[in-house]
Length: 573
Ligand code: DGT
Ligand code: CA
Ligand code: CA
Ligand code: ZN
Image 1 (cartoon, rainbow, N blue to C red):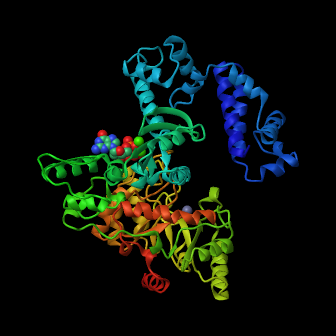
Image 2: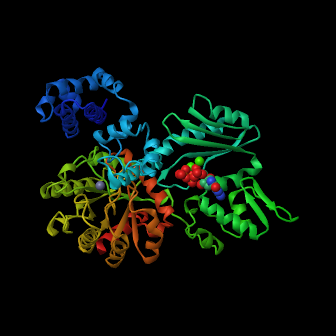
Image 3: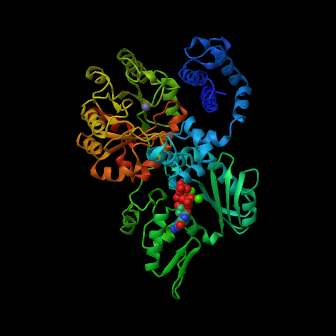
C-alpha cells in the first residue's frame, strides 16, 4: 500500500470509531495520524526500515505499527474487524458531506435510512428537516451533497476513459465478422469527462460481438443483453453500452451515437425539411423519394446541406449554422504543436530533472520546451527562491549552449499571483526570464470581485506573458475559484497576454466553452502540459482535444509557431 492508501484507511478507522462512540481521543489520534502521514515528504519505505516514523508529530508507537503493517501486508486485522461491526449503509452516510457520525446515527435509527437513495427520498419528502437537530438548511445541504457526489462519482476523466476504452476497441475489431468499430458518445466528442462508454460495431454476425462483450472477461455485471444492444458494468465500475448495426447502417449510427443529443435533434429537424425522417438506422422518405447514398458521415451531412462537422464541435453551439455556410474552421491538430511552456522539474515539485524533461521533449520532436518551476510563496510545492531561480536560468543557458539536445529550452517561472495581485518575484528577477506564467495558488476563497481584480492586476503586469490555469478547478473534485472570466479574457486581449489551456486531465482550464467567443475577440492561446513527469508531456494531446472543442485553429495557438517565430514573439514583449 502507498502513503495515500494507508492514510485513507487511518481516516476510515477514525470515522468508524466515531460512529461507535467510544473514546473520542482515539478517533482523533487516527485522524491526526492520517494527516501527519500525508505531510511526510521522505520515502516511506526508508522511514519504516529505519523505524523513524515516530519522529513525526502525530504518529505514536501504536500508529507506527499499524502503518508498518499496512505498508508491508496491505491489511490490518483491527480495521477489518471494526468495519464488520458497523452496517455499511451507515458508513456510506457518514462519507457524505454535511452528515457527521452523530447525524448519520440518527438518520439510521430514527428514519431507518439504509442507503443514499433512502436518504434522498427522505430529504425530498421533507422528513429530515423535521428531525430534532436537523432543520431545512441541513436538509438542503444533504440534497446538494448527494447531487455533488453523483455528478462526481458517475463520470470519468477523459484521459482515464481512453486508457480503458482503447484496448476494448482493439479487441472488438478482432472479432470475426466485425467490419468497423468506434467509441462514440461524449468520448468521441472529447468532452472533459465521460458518463459511460458507447461502443458501436458494424457486423452481419452480431451474436459473436455481443457474446464477447457480455462475457466474464470484460463485464463485472451485465445490465442488459439483447441481440444487437447490450449494456455492462466494467470491472472498474464504468458502464459501457454496445450497439451492433449492419455495415449499411454504420454511418447513420455513428452520427447518432456520437451525439450530442442536441446536435442530433437539430439534424433530425433539418432532415424532416428535406423530406426524410432520420434515425440511427437511416433515412426514411416521407413520400416516395429516392434515398441518398450514405457511406460515410460526410455523405449524411452533405445530404442535409452541411459540410462535415468534426465530432468535437457537435454540441449544438453554432456548428450546424456554420456548416450550412461552409464556415467550419480547420481545427488545430496534435501534429501542429511544436513545444509547450508550462513544465516542472525536480527543482520544485516535478519528478524528473531538467535534463530528463528536455530529453523527453527532444524525443517528442519538439523544437522548444519552457521550464516553469514554482515561485517562492508556493512553499508546499517547493517553490524556488530568487537565488535558485537565477541559478536555474544559468543552468538552462549552459544547456542550450552545449547543444546537447535539439530542443531549445526557455527559462520561465510559474509565478504565484499573490492575494493582492502582485507577482511573487521582483521585476528585476523576472526580467531575466524568457517568459512568465502567472497563476493563483492561494486564497481561493476570495470573493469574485477581489479575485477578478487580483488576476487582472497580474495580467496588466508587464512581466506577465500568460495566465496559468484560469480558474484553478479540479475536475470531479473541486470547483474553480469565483472569477469573472469574461473580464479576465478582455483584460488579456487588451494587454496582449496569452491564456493557457492547461492540459492536465484534472484541469482542462480555461474551460473550452469560453474559447470560441474569446478567439473571435482576439485572444491568443497556449496549450500547456503542466507536466510534473516526462510521461505527462503527453498531455498536450488532451490540450489539443479541448482546443478543438473551443473551435481553435493552429493560428490561435502560440505554441504551433516554429522556434524562430516564438523567439521573435517573446522578444517583442
Ligand atoms: P455521457 O455518457 O453522459 O458522457 O454523454 P453521451 O453524450 O455519451 O450520452 P449517452 O451515453 O447517454 O448517449 C450516447 C449518444 O446517443 C448521445 O450522445 C446521443 C445519442 N442519444 C442518446 N439518447 C438520445 C435521445 O434521446 N435522442 C437522440 N437524438 N440521441 C440520443
Ligand atoms: Ca456515453
Ligand atoms: Ca450510453
Ligand atoms: Zn504548474
